[in-house]
Image 1 (tube, rainbow, N blue to C red):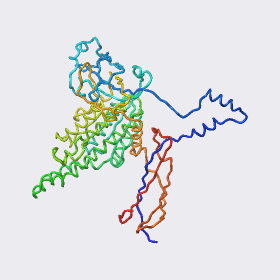
Image 2 (tube, rainbow, N blue to C red; image 1 turned 45 degrees about the vertical axis):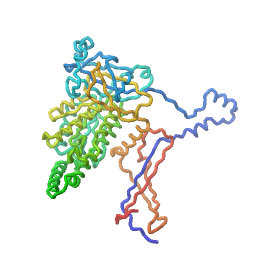
Image 3 (cartoon, one colour; image 1 turned 90 degrees about the horizontal axis):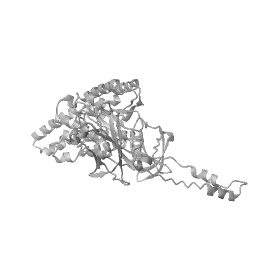
Image 4 (spheres, one colour; image 1 turned 60 degrees about the vertical axis):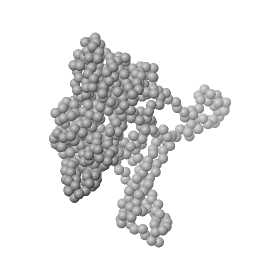
Length: 524
């Protein structure tokens, strides 16, 4: 018998598929069994009065796309009194019917239907204005599923809900200057911008910590300020990748120029000097946006509209353009973030969440085309989800204070077909024939898709899913062609597994696998 060498690092990974188990079959059988001393005829008669429970369940309802719309006149004042006939919703070029329109305007001094602006019709609206301008028509949207009155054309019942805000710190895309400014702005909003009754959460993402809920939703400013201090003092939230962006931006052209002097072709020099930097930048930004999407998934069970204050500094739509010419073949080989951003916006709409982007000054605030690309990412994320975005450091406090503070809203209930397309769609809203040039993203998720998103969230959120303690026993069972076959027994506590509630299967299955590595690096 020989030995295969010592086996040192052991990486155990599991693919888990869990659901609640049903134990009703045994109980039903006992209940339906004739009792001692009781005639069978009585049991049959009782069975006719109370039919057997076959475990079948039928549900009915109507899917409603809910859009929360802000309408302002030419002077920037909220307009109330609009009706269902004043709105049109177009999704991917097709007009979708409206089921109801609710007017939630309680602003003082809001012009009504009889005001001059209302009577002038088209003159009271300016086509193509930005959602960040004071005189614009801004739109925020979300999706929901209702049944009952909504199916007959009435709007869902109106409820008074607390405001929910999330301060989301994108540590994986913050340089040192961005960290300082993000901490200052977040602290300022908590101390001065937070209103009584607001429920606020701190969350963030970094390479080391993963997706983390720093504090749960709370109305206490002291809890939020303490969590903010602890997060910025923790070295795990100092992501090294964005810190060295300036070094990468210097190294790429320096290496490229040296390469050209050696007589190499430009494409060859870009490949050897800059391609790796471009790929790393794209990968970092993609992971950040995927984490944001998963976090938004956790908000869909909270009723009402939610607001995310998203702090970003480095991430942009086309990260490869930091290092490669836009028209080069190498740049086209790297996927940009546009489709992923559309998916993030659609997920936000499904959760009735608006992403309000706080853009930190890029490259210490120097005016560059790269900084404009970062601003463009923020503007698109805000437009896709119905939020607002800052463009400069000077308008950042005002942007954060305006987020979620609308006093005049219209809720549009749009009828959804029985089998809507299962992809990201573009939605636009027209008010009295005027179509905004802002395009929103919506998507209709199946039950299985929603469950899968929650499962991914459970695996990625380290604050919810800490590492489990495991014990492993290895037993060599056979040797063939110089290699051993080893049985691995893994023991761990089942309560460490996180149950994901949204699953249709009645039975749960799980598997655990083992990946072994030898000290000498050979595969096992």
